[in-house]
Length: 99
Image (tube, rainbow, N blue to C red; front, side):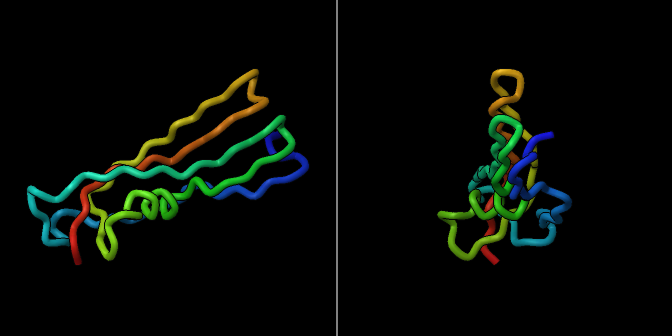
């Protein structure tokens, strides 16, 4: 019933990440994390982009032209007062390699 009056949300469906054999992986490659969220309010309004692409973009925001590999994904949900306010986030963590 969330988003009865207004809904503009994006949920993750699928995302293919590179593996260490797809890139020039190095032990010194940094680990980064990013998240993308949807928000719902009083069951009437819902908005946000909790897709994988948005979470990966957030993880790579300071990495310039880089690739994310060896990606792990999780979903984090916070809900208050029986769901009157809720926030669902896709969280990705991976290693950064230069193309």
